[in-house]
Amino acid sequence: MVGAPRLPRLVGALFLSLAAAGIGLIVTAAGPALAGPGSPALKVAPTIPDDDPTPIVDPGQVQRLSIPYSPEEQGVESTIPQVPVADPTYIFVNMDGTDLVCQGGDDATVDSSIIACQYGFSGAYPDYGGTAAQRQSVMDAVTQDWAPFNMVVSDSRPNASGYTMCMTGPGDHPFGSNVLGIAPLDCQDANASNVVFAFHDASQLSGSFGANTQATTISQEVAHAYGLEHVSNTSDIMNPYNSGGNPSFTDTCLTLVDGGNGIYCSSQHTQYCSSSLQNSYQELLGMFGAAEVDSQAPSVSLTYPSEGEVFGVGADFLITCSASDDQAVASVVLWVNGDQVGSKASAPFEWNVTDIPEGDYDAYCVATDTSSNSAMSAVVSFSATAGSSGDTTTTGGEESGDEGGSTGGGDSADSGDSGGSTGGDDEGGSNDEIGTDSLDGGDDFGSGLPPGFGQGGDFEGGCACRSGLPPSERGWLLLGLLVLPMLRRRR
Image (cartoon, rainbow, N blue to C red; front, side, top):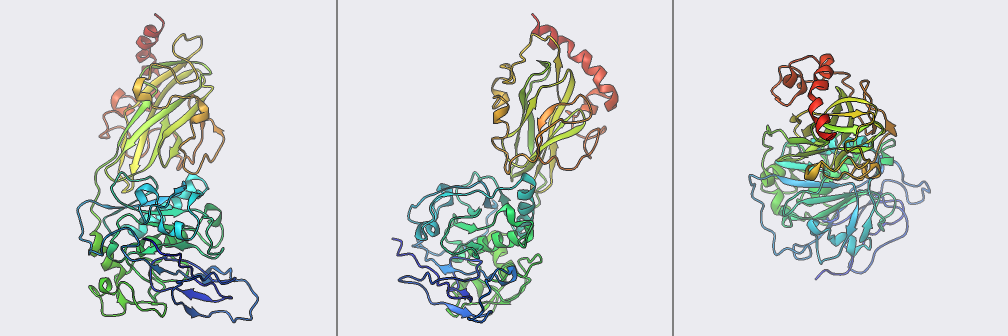
């Protein structure tokens, strides 16, 4: 049974630190008291005189706080030391928002949050906003924080029985505008499915809270869910103040900051350090193990159009790709006639083609996972012909079958684009142009295949490997290859 809400007191213009636990907050306290019955004792560490009327907005004056939750309050039976397993542990950075529910404790798999329910902000949680590139900059920084450990950081919900979910967005919470994050402190990761919060959004990236700072918030809140507490050294992610830079989980025993209420997860810390010290790196290594080298490339295919598809000039349709990986797919890039025309960081990997000009087209997708392993799909050739009586409807044609995925019109093309489109109807590459909804196209490699996928590569489906001709001559060969499909469609 979860007790009454325990609200931190926000008194005057002072920094507050809660009992070294649970809700890992990043906060500068300012404003009226929010304390209620059962509030834990607070340590007040003044940094601005009480009579100073200046609001605390300096990002260097932000502190991370925490409130303890027992295993029973979190919906688990007991605190059992974590033993590293071969399978990776997942961190889900949720930038798309969700509906948070109350089911008596934390359970990320069903979006149940003890914090949101106790503090009155369950229900619809807003998304992070921003472009795919902005989101990826934060994801890259978070991934770097956790790279030494057997962890997978993903912005897509994992297909796993348990994972830590960090809701990342400007939540409508009661803690004030200076609170940047909150999380349950869960000693020994007793509950493997916690929900934590980072109250950041894309609009802050251009100000005082860049990608590294936001990543530090996310990583500290996640680490609170594994029992890590605050330390005094600013080079460690678990330092309660925002000191800028790019801190990490350091392999050093550092002094714990206990907020005047003692250390909550002491037995966890003393496995690696003397009393009142914490080695965040060794604790995470002991719980989750070292990162395994991921050499497995993703699986990727271009699922629509089909090989030899013929469209009428001016047709609208979707190009769709499918990608999967044993860890996580980081991006899928679409190439058409040697030019990169689109990139997406999350499924569905599809691009809207509008008003296609007459011509012949070679298209393929390149998928990259979170360990930078890449794979290229087989090249699919299709064409647009004036007066064609083939399947040239704006739905992409009905001959795509089950492979084509969603073959609806252009209105649905951006339905899964995390962060939205960063451009309008971008007209593709320099060869027979295709009008596509442009994403953050990434690096422009110009004409030809991307690095590692040229002639002599190991990808048998690659265009140069299949034709044996340089890119400038492939179009002539494709004209011959398209004769039979065109004749079949005109019967």
